[in-house]
Length: 266
Image 1 (cartoon, rainbow, N blue to C red):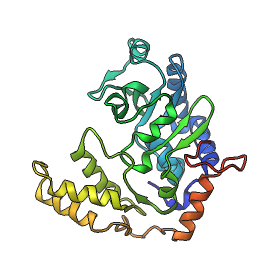
Image 2 (image 1 turned 135 degrees about the vertical axis):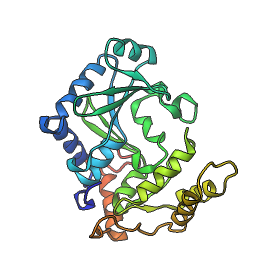
Image 3 (image 1 turned 180 degrees about the horizontal axis):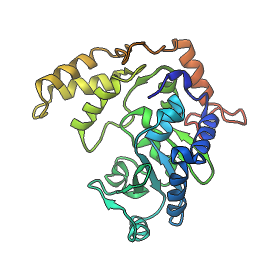
Image 4 (image 1 turned 45 degrees about the vertical axis):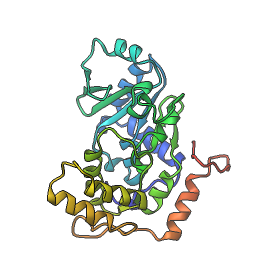
């Protein structure tokens, strides 16, 4: 991700950034908007996880991964809508679509892993913020009303860069641990206490199927709870002070009308 100095001040600013990206043909935003329009025939659509997370942290230039889309519809309705297109079913119950500029993972809300397995009860798209393993992924952009919604710890991550667990249950513990290691190589990211404990348990769990080097890295990462990771590149990124982090978190809990709310709906 890009320089954390580009972090969005609040959900309203992130909403503006998302709208600008979707309107930018040079970035392939029109392709995303077209797919959202198609999916919108089945129900409300949200852009979830990586795209709003990266754009909140570093602006449009920070985003360069897949686009995750969730539709508030029945799985059968989504299957019917995508039947004649290029969608390929993935092993977790969603669909993979390769576009000209972006790749997409598309889900019906009831088919998302945490909802389908009963770990989270979801009656609307905003409940998705309770389904992510990492707290920094608990953010979505509601495409119809152009509003941002995020989990209770997303603002704290945006303020000081400490990554922690939102929902521990996940379908791929080994892959999740390896992803945690990759995250900690990003500038300005640190491991929180719950994630540190998880990494320790993964490093010592029977039948973990991890090589010795990975176990060593997990153990080292777990020992760095609350400390900034080593910077990537020639220049260290500046981490904001605890006071600045608290101020950023407060900004994210104030909506445009001046009301404070724990989950930060915008």
